Image (cartoon, rainbow, N blue to C red; front, side, top):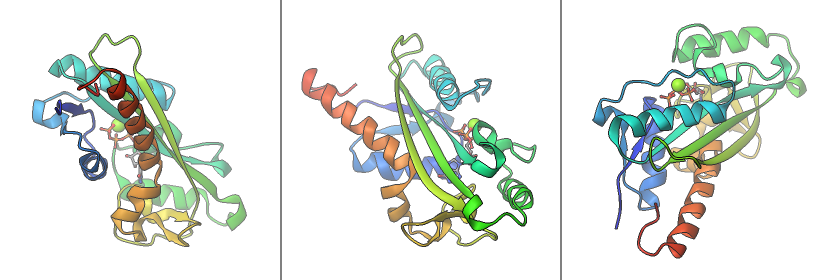
Length: 207
Ligand SMILES: O=P(O)(O)OP(=O)(O)OP(=O)(O)OC[C@H]1O[C@@H](n2cnc3c(O)ncnc32)[C@H](O)[C@@H]1O
Ligand SMILES: [Mg+2]
């Protein structure tokens, strides 16, 4: 029997990917907008803290289990920036164009080998707002920052993220391919196997 899980995210790009990935796993997720959940303040100093803050906030508002994603891109030449501040790198939250333009500007003239970067995705799953043992999963996707944008798929920094194993940008990949190899896909695969293990212990309920 499927139980509803609230997806504690307001990012349309992420929500699309979650729907595709979790649908395949037979998990019923509803975005927090369906419950009018107010956005959590991301005051943590790590992806892990922020993911837990978002999941706890959604649990508190809905009384349901929640899954949150805190993610971002870490650029070696910039000592790990924008990292946990990826959504607001250029100032305004969620302005992808400005974020990408600023990243290009900061890496102007930097050689290809020094443009290494990676996406992180931390997922936090909480059964209820006081859950003392949130489940936390971490996926990483290695690549480098291109010198101009390429591709129309995906969201956020995808048009600037070169994926060596595919020899193109993340935004040039069909969504089915991104959803097999991305940081988010890797973290979700870990979550899915944890759920499967649990459901074989507690028969009938994977949550
Ligand atoms: O907090 P929620 O509501 O989930 O939405 P958000 O956009 O604020 O999400 P984050 O706080 O986790 O910030 C992550 C930022 O990192 C970027 N990002 C994360 N995953 C990405 C991906 O798969 N492709 C491209 N950019 C990504 C994107 O710009 C996001 O806005
Ligand atoms: Mg956010």
